[in-house]
Amino acid sequence: MEVSSKWRWNFEGKEEAKTASACTIGSYLNTLNENINKNDTTKSVIPLSHGDPSGFPSFRTSKVSEDALVDALQSAKYNGYHGNPDIFHASRSIAEYLSRDYPYKLSPNDVLVTAGAKHGIDVLITALAVPGANILLPRPGYPAYKALATFNRLEMRHYDLLPEQDWKVDIDGLEALADDKTVAMVVINPGNPCGNVYEREHLKKIAEAASKLGMLVISDEAYGHLVFGSNPFVPMGVYGEIAPILTIGSISKRWMVPGWRFGWIVMCDPNGILQKHGVAESIKNYLNIGVGPPTFTLGAISRILVETPEDFYSNIINLLRKAADICYAGLREIPCFTPYKSQGSMFLMAKLNMSLLEGIDNDMEFCTRLAREESAIVLPGEALGLKNWVRVTFAVEISALEDGLSRIKAFCFRNAKQQ
Image (cartoon, rainbow, N blue to C red; front, side, top):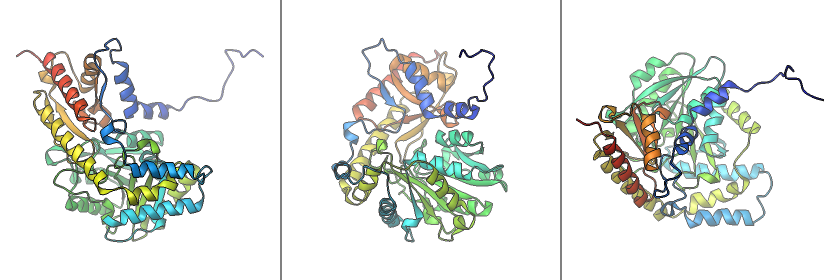
């Protein structure tokens, strides 16, 4: 049967999916990579744009983690769907591991396993997206929150992080944005994209503001413990008695294995507020609908958390500290850059002075031309909610970082406005 061109079909694409996809880091990186000059064989691509250093030899995960995963796979115990005992044992291991940093003991029932941190974001945003609700997101911030809120039709309001105050939360501005429909705020610590590491007292003020406004806190701690400045890492859940905290974590960053897709949501809520208001049930119900982490990672997670040697962690921290210092110093030498020193994660933010550049009007154009002319990729601030800034990833081999900084410097001087 030939289908008429006038035939009526009852379906169409979802506009929110298109809008949400356009604001992801992946979408921006696709655009930048499409602009690389494929005919220039003299330059390899330098990826100073995303937080996945796992492909670089210096950032290889520990042998303990590799052996744990291989042993779980070869045991043939984890080839099927995961069962409740697998989930319980993994949750118990995570609870014991995280409780070292808490003033109270987490139980396995407080921990929900996910297929990585981004899956955790998906679960929480979807569970909280009730009609009429709104959520407070940091600016600049991690674009996955914006993408998933857009897809779920959850209203977003953006509060500012203050660069001159080590990217602290503008709490007065935050409170002015909230109303009786504000269900949650997102805090990312250690910071992506800013590299901030919040002091204990600032985290307490955030919790107190959340309690005052009647909202919960989503604490994104994907980069937990990856700190190398003067401030130690303090989990937001320490203040779970002030306001309910939903913590997102994973093994992707600290263990350098984002491809293993294993993470968790922790309900830091000693007062049981999330349970009383049905939020805990909504989160668990959505997890039951969707997928979980690969089963063999469930079999490996206990050994990964318990047996990874301290020297693995310290070596990674020392490497990140060295790379962060090199990146900051290198960008400071370029007149059109004002970099802000990173204290944690894998990134720093740098402000662009567009008035010093010829024929480049904004951060997206800067990044596109840098990719085309120098095969160096940095992320435009537009992707993060902050125009005429860039996010630079320093979690690469030191030689690649130095090469990338040299290319950025050459590009900026070549395109400098003549005085």
